[in-house]
Length: 358
Ligand SMILES: Nc1nc2c(c(=O)[nH]1)N[C@H]1C(S)=C(S)[C@@H](COP(=O)(O)O)O[C@H]1N2
Ligand SMILES: [Mo]
Image (cartoon, rainbow, N blue to C red):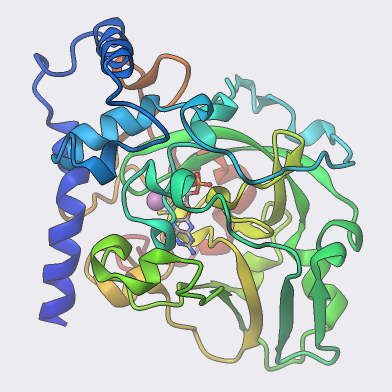
């Protein structure tokens, strides 16, 4: 336990470090971009080579540069296909009177948390390009009457797809607005017919160290014991907002965002939204979850977005909304209870002490 806490301390420091970069280092986006152009002309910036060259060894700097990296700098081996989907009115850009500004696609696909491909923000986009998503098998079983295995084509064809525009709030206090494409987790769960014993849903990411360098190296993978696992209470999983996403911005997911299929639970911190899922099991008991195992005093099972419940090492009262303004815009906004979805989900927690069940 103490060992785990130490690990969590060690690799999350960079997240507070980036928030604490002195103003003099984070002054102006154009200065930064000019510097990039210069480095490029001098031949220092190529196919995402920054980190491997240790040109900038400080993680905070690497994160800042990673943020501005764009697809043109990277070899994009992965091919995304267009999807066919409906666009229900309930999930358009105007939600509860709020106009949501979409995070640009390039930011969504280059600033990622996917520790299996490296614990720095720009590493998944670089190291996941050759990830094989087809063939794929997703097994759904446990406390169900009709266990099934979905193959790659089933993932995009078995259930009708819709576009859902959701806020994504990471526990590290940044957020995006992403147009996902997917189907209700509820549709999948109803399809397999849960038994009366089913109370929770357990999810598991692929374990394949040959393809996922972070699973091979504790240095790259942030000290997590893989496979990455997550869980929901059955009523949370059945909530209409819980989404199995297979795409974003109208096309199949890139690997760095969790191809070929990932969970999206928009009222919870991002780490609940587990990527590249191979197993969904309905269970009687509350399943173990990766970040809770790693640092239970910092990350709970519920992980509902809550501005009033601080992380032990930082406040959750506000967040940096990632838009075209980038790191340099003053786009800090107040965090909303349940990430703005309180009207839909607060009833799930009505008799619970949210400071205890964090
Ligand atoms: N398997 C797996 N799933 C994961 C993660 C991860 O490291 N491994 N990171 C989580 C975290 S912390 C966040 S914020 C979101 C980020 O999703 P995005 O990169 O698509 O924005 O994925 C979540 N799902
Ligand atoms: Mo996160």
